[in-house]
Amino acid sequence: MSDRYLSFANSNAGRRLVGALGLPAPVRLERWRAGRTRPVDGALLIGGDGPLAAAVAAFHKRLTDRTFADADERFGLPRWTAEHGPKLKALVFDASNIASAEQLGALREFFQPALKGLDTCPHVVILGRAPESLKDPFAASAQRALEGFSRSLAKEIRRGGTVQLLYVGKGAEEQLEGALRFFLSPKSAYVSGQVLRLSACAAKVADWTRPLAGKKALVTGASRGIGAAIAETLARDGAEVVLLDVPSAATALDALAARLGGRALALDICAENAAARLVEALPDGLDILVHNAGITRDKTLAKMSDALWDSVIDVNLRAPQVLTKALLDAGTLRDDGRVVLLASISGIAGNLGQSNYAASKAGLIGLAQAWAPALGKRGIAINAVAPGFIETQMTAAIPFTIREAGRRMNSMGQGGLPQDVAETVAWLSQPTSGAISGQVLRICGQSLLGA
Image 1 (tube, rainbow, N blue to C red):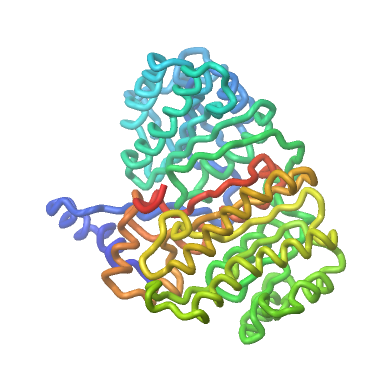
Image 2: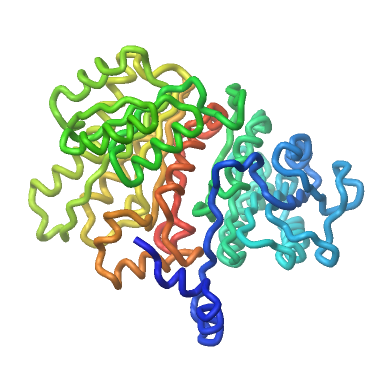
């Protein structure tokens, strides 16, 4: 469903009226398009003099053909100034050496002039060290301060911009390229205000144009909406896709599988024999498992029947638990595999009339966190993604006033698209994303709801 206010606010007449009345003016977000060859289409500014900035400078030419530094003769790059430009499309600031309250001033010194020279839809990444990894309490305190700064900057940047904080563990420097290829590009258009931890990971991507080449992926709930977008994006990135959905969706499922050169599997994931049938259907193994299938049966708790409660818990939480364990026990999910669970910001913040849905989605986040250490011994990474308001058939059916509130209650002032979820899932499915496990990544335009 189209967002009429977004279209109006970006029209010539709309811009004048919105500006005169002081109304929100959301920017139409730039998203990844076929044919792009580099993550950053414009100028990249690298700031800070720490080891992480030096690591980024070593591969900057693979990100863009225009890179600048924040000081003369740093990394052999030309210095950027607000007076002489050019407009900035991406910024990386290495804050890993900040070890005191006084040194936090470096954040203001770097970002204050840079904010005056931003292009539309800029992407910012701040790099630091996880506070819990530092012995000095003052240094740990300073690194923890980066979270408050980055989330506040994400709310101030405007112009369709995003801001993320990556805590980079020792030995994880080699995984920075994969992370920056996502977070500095339009693939992360609706992801902002997030904090992630990168750990060491030996896996590498051989071909960044097809990072999932040679991988087999299973996507549940794949016949339409977000599931279909995920399947399309995984296939675009080189994966062989197996699409699963309920038998009643077989026609749409078969058509999509044929278009993507994949395979359709009509299966009720809550059936008693679902696990056995799934293992049997995947004799050659699996590298990527995406649990997208989910339902809502909304009622306030006082009016919720056993059937409404049980159906949501069974589909959204119990089935992913049972099926994943079966695939692991059978050896179907290979070592160095990737598991992505589709949670929701409702599982983080809760939602009126969705106690069953919120419980199921919070349970998926808990599953990723609890299972990560054990699966890590096999090189398997498991993570959850938590979409916010995404423009789908489901959200189109929401009453107008509630739908508009959902669209506007985030830093972007608009809803996301299925593509935004799909790009994030595809990135977490890549070999280098083994650097991330047991974490939850929100795809919500920095929603005002939740943490």
